[in-house]
Figure 1 (cartoon, rainbow, N blue to C red):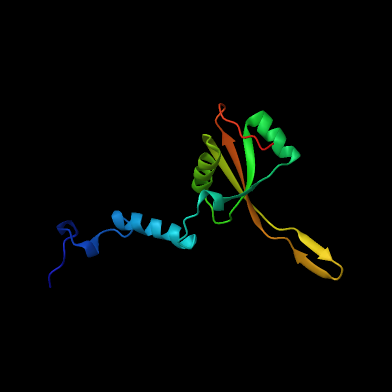
Figure 2 (cartoon, rainbow, N blue to C red; figure 1 turned 180 degrees about the vertical axis):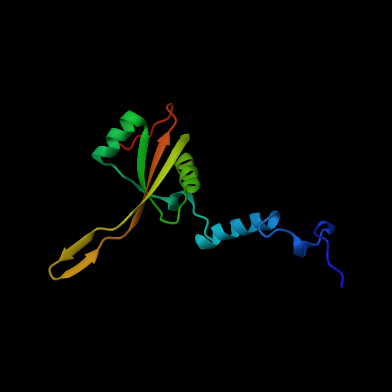
Length: 130
């Protein structure tokens, strides 16, 4: 009985998860997780979060908060902010926020879960909301 030599280039003997197949699989996983969607910049950023804490953060640290699409990634947020506001983004932090429990008379419910992004800009750039 003949045995195959791993050095002979038999593709069945190569390590699983190596080479181009692994790269193609990782890209497919990302698209599958997001449902195969590519979001436009106006779909990524839903609204700016203008709060007292946000105003303090924008004046001191040049960082702005936005409510974003739950399917959006940090890369999507960076591209959307740079294209919509014509600024240079240094960092993006994202947070998944849970909805709060609410009651109305005898019914209990919950507000929706949402995603928040804090975007730090280059010191030369600013965003004016007012």
